[in-house]
Length: 335
Image (cartoon, rainbow, N blue to C red):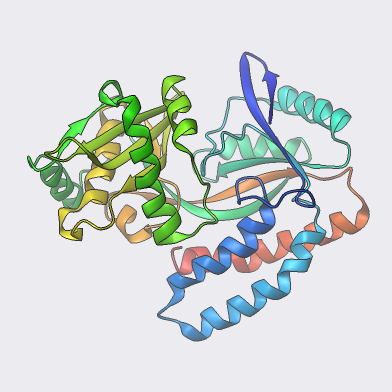
């Protein structure tokens, strides 16, 4: 990792080469598009034939994805979170950043993640003007309270009522203790690593603590009557946008306690109170739609004009497949 000055902003930058160290999808597109996509096929359980066909296609596509060279990348604005909230950059800044990165990393693709076609339309157009290709990545859900509050849906009202119950106490960032971070690591792992997949980022207690102390992540928790955290959500804010990259709860507790519902209610209320756009990320699609989330296709902007023609040819095929097949699947199956 390194940093890069872009106007007044200092951005984190990751440099990855899968030949040296395979890593998670945040820095390794083949993991995101192939390995993680195969994990997501569990959402097609009601269509076993489609699931089997898609799994076969993804296996066949793996060598093609590797041939793009995207795993050998440098990624500006990578906060090591599922959703990298964009920074306000214009054509001049993007071209200057591209020039500087190419001078130091002439053999690597340049990738900016997490641009969606609803709230980042202008940024997407800017990247196109700077000769970047746009590659569909996933479908996310947006809860936009910047101009006017989103209508309160029935499910959100029920979640707020659940949050108001006395069996758990809501604690804010100032009430998070140093001794809580090992528990926060455990709660996150119970949900994202054990319940879902180890392809998700694996955050340590020390990293979570540093992000909290630096004011980058703002943690809210649910303490039980014994004082232990049983639920946690960490928010990442930039300008008028927020995301919740760290969510976790004790999955051994009776689901009727609705810990995930309570944590998401905290996020929706926070977006309303602060008049923010809440990027709810991907997953739990029906849950988010039922609370006012609006679907958007998220893209990665990739600069690869300097790479060998074989890499560029493979990338062109991958882009076509994602546009013609990937987007319809995400929309039709609401992944």
